Length: 395
Ligand code: PMP
Ligand code: GLU
Image (cartoon, rainbow, N blue to C red; front, side, top):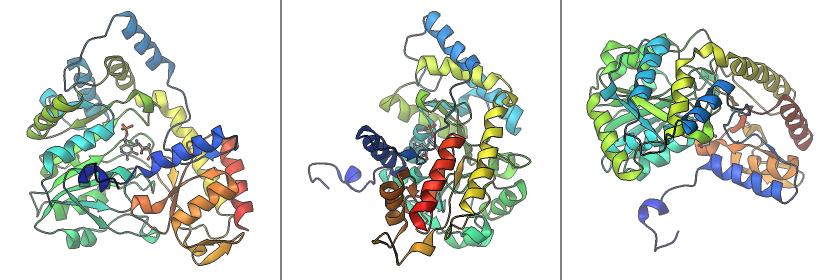
């Protein structure tokens, strides 16, 4: 807390995922052999065809400011992608391209929330939803779940959390951090509640759409009675391993898209021109082109679950998508490991960093104080070694 800084930033938490990644980096620079399973970042390189498109864009002299809401032909590629993959129909005025899905989410919070508006967050939720909402004046309202229900909320829990101040709900499916995937039927059950409260805007974060090991991906906006108040958020960071290229986008009701365009126009302007050109190529290609990454993530999920099952005190669900496992490690609370007392998920995550040289993220940052998040977007060798070290550190 520094009184010279704004209340806004003083009341904000540092992103726990980024903080842990920075700490791991620091320790590595000091010469420690840290295995980083904290950051949700594919370890693959960008597919060749996407790289070539970026190189071509540089050669073609793309250099100037881009339209605030994105190139028209990228919007068209996004519209085609929404139709092809999600059976969603959007027009160009409903699309806004941003500097990562994180900016898409920040725009939404800034244009939709007034002071004191409540934001429903089915927990566990992605770390930044809560602080992005708070910065915009919103009040996060967690809807707790448990590992027994695969970390999914029920319609009863949803309805019980709604108040006259509820403005928005944000969730991800496939979910970061639990890997849970809501089926079409499960989303419909939630929609049946939401239709009774027409003023609530739903933000459906589908950035892990393609990293889904179930039969298929369902979108809230596919329901006709939800389409007019659902914002679909997506991006290329995860599926195309383009995390550093910073391109995310939304399909939204037109008035919301216009407001995001206005907000972005005063804060960052249009997203990077070369990354936008490359994104056109990424999205125009069929998702089958990136299936090799999805297959690898599925293999690794099996491996992590199998190895974790051999470590006492780790309780897991079976994640159906994304590239995280979110084990409940509350078994260790109140116990001492190598003389260190473990009283929280943060203590446990720190213990793993210090004693096993493995970086994870505490579940507290995701709204679940019993769990830690392990990203398996790492090589098989790293995963095996990390699990071996964790086992050794706790038995
Ligand atoms: N949503 C979720 C659920 C995420 O895990 C991430 C990870 N970065 C983002 C949004 C933001 O993605 P980006 O800004 O890289 O597009
Ligand atoms: N979304 C990733 C994660 O959850 C990247 C880090 C971040 O942007 O928070 O780890």
